[in-house]
Length: 108
Image 1 (cartoon, rainbow, N blue to C red):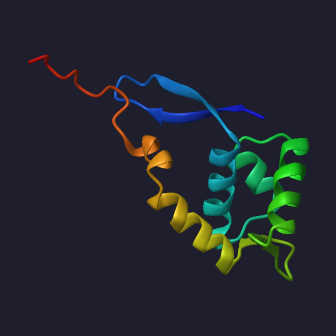
Image 2 (cartoon, rainbow, N blue to C red):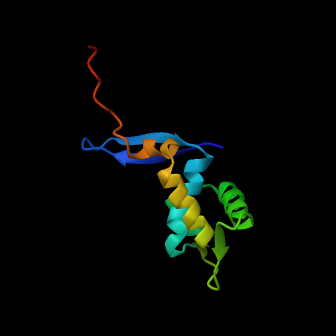
Image 3 (cartoon, rainbow, N blue to C red):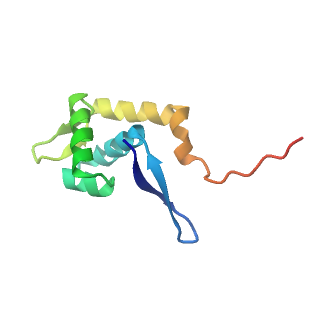
């Protein structure tokens, strides 16, 4: 399931939209839930529909990467934080931090 997400607002004021894959969405949910968030906040902040939120949050709860606290807020578990650290170390997820328009290398 892919969805559009605002990647960046560049200096010209143009909003760049990119397709996110499941991994991107999971990582964004876990990052947002580190400090605790209710379902509505997650849906708004991560641009998820109700059905998407229900699917992702259910799966993350089932896998033990999220938990629900006594205030009914979703929080990233210790296992979820380990997962996030591993994702940050994975070169496949480094494209987010790369320059969107890298300079072209000159042929030698």
